Image (cartoon, rainbow, N blue to C red; front, side, top):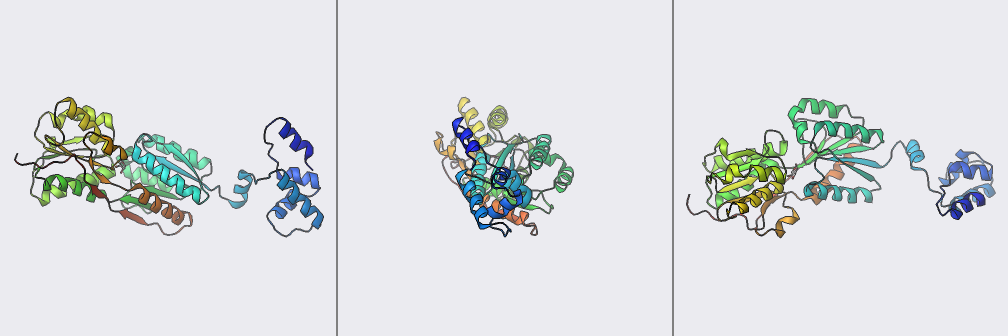
Length: 353
Ligand code: RIB
């Protein structure tokens, strides 16, 4: 009976973690014998000692040491998730969905934030691998797209399975789960065109971030389909951040050429709307705006934001399925989901221009 051991723990008010070797010493058997008994594996010791081992384990709330368990099983049931912006509700929501789903499958999720920077992302990957995660789920940083060849080489060298979520890489054989961004950019622009807008600008970041490269391509597809002009001055390179959009919104708002704007995400749309209000420019009457992500906060705005939805519940479910695929060593797969337009009040008809 581990009386001294347990009493000491209880007397001091803290839980003393009983280990295999403590039980083995008390019963007078090897550590391996205790492990075999507690795992219901065959072992040549008396039935009395087996019962004593089980009783001591139960009385002392013995739980297998995670590190010891991982050594035996060669897995930790821990998954690393790297997101580029923990302040962005899209990623916060995605992280929560993934954490819920993985916990139900017995996995612990470790969430880290790369700040959309490639060097931070690289360091975090190594830190997570050093902590023996079983796999990595990565939403790549925007900077990683500045040199895709180098990024692919870096990902290939990782010693654990990976899944790219939300932001993929073309022609790269790993599991990837993302939304069809070209279609998203297309339906966003079409919503403005069908309401009569002919001069449509964009605030997004196509020269760096793959999702914006495709959203911008979808915007161009719509303009071409409807025979509308485009101007370089109608495209403003903007990070996925409220502040950046707020600072740059004058470029489109003040020249009063464009009557519609496709924003790279909802935070950009919010920055434009704040600046428009300060300038006395009415949304949607003077300028109509379509966002991207359909964040919950869009409904709290004076003018609720029409936005392209990327359902994070579906994205999360498909990502966990892809993760199990990657961990079990199956052939990598691309999973492309279809976004949809959620119409609210930030787009109005344009009669003449
Ligand atoms: O809001 C952040 C954006 O970057 C989202 O649209 C998501 O697709 C991510 O890539």
